[in-house]
Length: 317
View 1: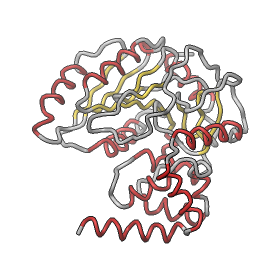
View 2: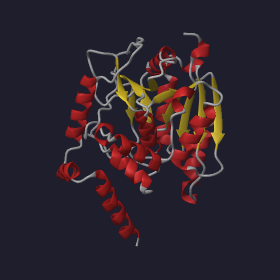
View 3: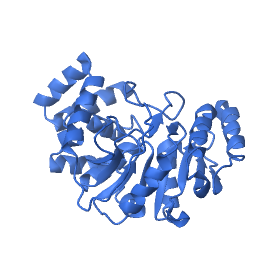
View 4: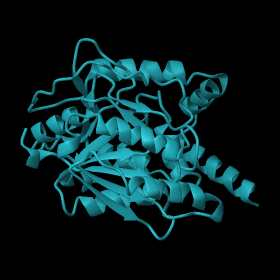
């Protein structure tokens, strides 16, 4: 692989120095780190109480080595994670054709950059594929990679041709999903509440770039190439930039190096879709979720959305 074909790494951070150090040190151990450009976006201070931690992060990133080049962008305003990632990826893809995107709470294996760059180069002209990720919730001993519909968000990569599908308007995304009558498919056959997350985005309860990235690519039938061996571990369940509640997910890193080959007409891996759907049903099971699932099965989603809005309005009164 020639150096010129390596994608730059974008790293987003704010005030979590302990996690950031682990993220950077893991990337430095990658075999392609010295040939890769690292572009860091550090968000602006949200309130005076965060100033000391944010300044510690800024001092640390100014002294990072171990990469071909380190470029730092420090925001004067607090954008929040969603706006930071959307604007950072958009800005970087104006200068590069492809990017690898990392947050400050992801630990990677030494072969992560190799896998991501191999996949980016092999599938650069395959229009069906819009995203690459080193994370998989379910590993496979029989394969090195597989495809799923819709984008992913942990240790991921894309091209400018893939990011062009991103739509920040959650209302438009919801309406298009409703028109296509594909909410169940969008939710991994009812196993994961992606639709609920999109509705929460619409109602201002969350501010997630990831759910909009998934919906945007899903609506265009675009695929993500997943490593079937886990190359990414999510370590951040605290601080200002996390809202994830799924703590029973597989984060054990693989020591195997997955090999990427070109499939000219990639399709959703139905076996992995079944295994992942079953996995999420098992790890997310509770009486509360079971009851919610029963309600969804008998009440039309538009009516559920109406009740959701009424409840939200009452809480705000």
